Length: 400
Image (cartoon, rainbow, N blue to C red):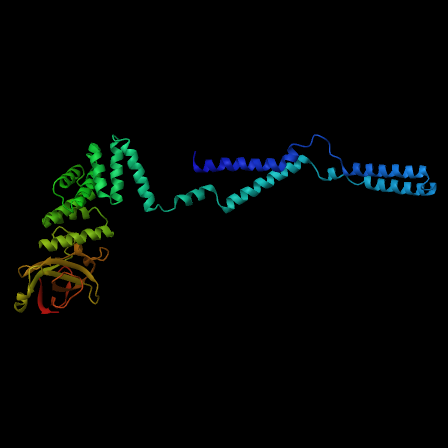
């Protein structure tokens, strides 16, 4: 029985009860016939005439007075008894009952539809936010249920995902383990399990987490979670080239105007920077010629200021604006260094470098790699260069 039915049945019964109480005198009339006002007047005047007759016979009044009083009473009795009976004025009992029924039903219906119906009330109740405590209580109750049904492998997988959402990774790992072979054919569950195990191992993918990732990618080479974890594992192990390749495959499956896509592009740029990797020629920007590439050189006076760990940043801006359009970061190494700026390094995918006809390019070598310039940074003069140009020469010859 749904919520609407469970409301309407009691409401209907209550309406019937109210109608029965209100219409009881009409539905169940009195067994004895009621006395009308005309009958009561006639009885009273008859008693008065009897008293007058007794007084006349006893000599209390004269015959003349008796005749006068008797005539007056007969006249008053005639006038009162010719008035319309009050029971007749009341009208038909059936009509009254029907009228009351219709009035009550129409009034209750009007109030019901004007003030709101049970469906809208139910919808509002269902829209109430679920609290953290409520979710944890439901998960705890589900866990108790699963302990009583340990062979329900699908249930253990569902419980594991619930624990994972709550951030209870240790409990999630135990639940995934009890799910057994149910997850072996599901790449998403395998990737989730690997993520939980890696989190419990302080980010290490060594051993079972990597086995689960490979198993997931074997079942579905394009699984988003598995690709992300595989790239992360390569990045953590210092294999930046494989990390870039894996994340680029992931990036192709995600709309470019989403936060997720921007985060992935940021990770790709960081992996390229740490691995000293130039932008691949397979990107859209490179294939269309919409990039700026060339060499970065440093003046002889400043070469001694380069230290291990310094970060080289090549920054492209729309001429006259401060906000970067694209940024390339890479570790400082032997100069001259090659660079390539393209849409893959765009700060905002909806405003890529390829949409500009020319860009203002500068180099900054930083100790921290922070976006905000700092005192002591080594910099080049900003140059306005056409997008699509190659063999560009950028000279770092100033100290901020």
